Image 1 (tube, rainbow, N blue to C red):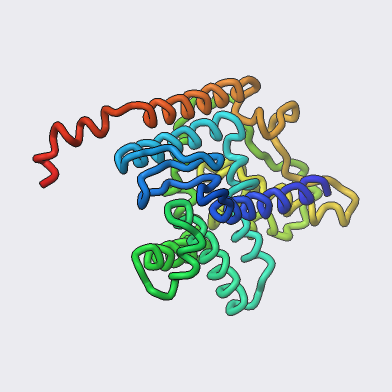
Image 2 (image 1 turned 45 degrees about the horizontal axis):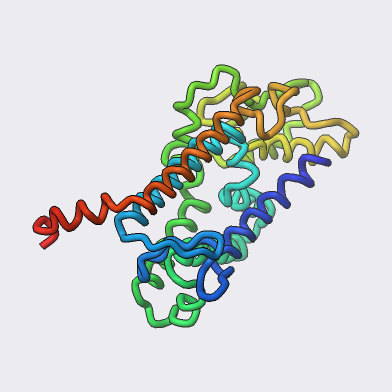
Length: 289
């Protein structure tokens, strides 16, 4: 039961922290915020003056750094332990009533969308002025629609084709990447729970390795929930038994991941300290007329 007890709380804690962070502020300075309105980058309750160009470069640096750093440390375990799509997969499997399912997913999508926009504008102001339908409110609506569509309709298509995290994980050179494999076919009772919970449609791990597999580990948890009733362990398990979640890419890949994170923060501080972006604007301001 250990895996099942760890997986769901990890997903919920990650979602809770993502939703909570935009609301945390001290003296009107947030824990993390890309404040385009007041031209500043707010981090750890400290505010740094930053032009629009600098904020865009910081966002791009964070996005690329997190993609590479997380892939080199926890690899595709991100999909099962941290991605909200995995929560949607569990909800879809648990709730049978289509109306309750739709409104549950819609509510989750709205919370995610509201929280995402709150990283760029004050969550308090967005909440108080939401019914005024300004640009921020409209973007929340657009993202809510997008998230709901992904969770209910396009999960397989998004996870295996459009997800940037999956794309980076697929192209990184990983000769001995952590994968899941099915064994002990004689003990399988063909409950199909591993297939139903998989975010990729028509993917059956019992048929062998499939390149579309995002290695989220949900099938292992689903199988374990059934096999424990027969006093057996999951029939689906990790290929490399000597590796944990932080050594799933390779035995020493977390070192490269840490270096990526250090480089990312160094680049962000360089962007904040440099003035070449603003100088570029003033030198070429005729282009902006």
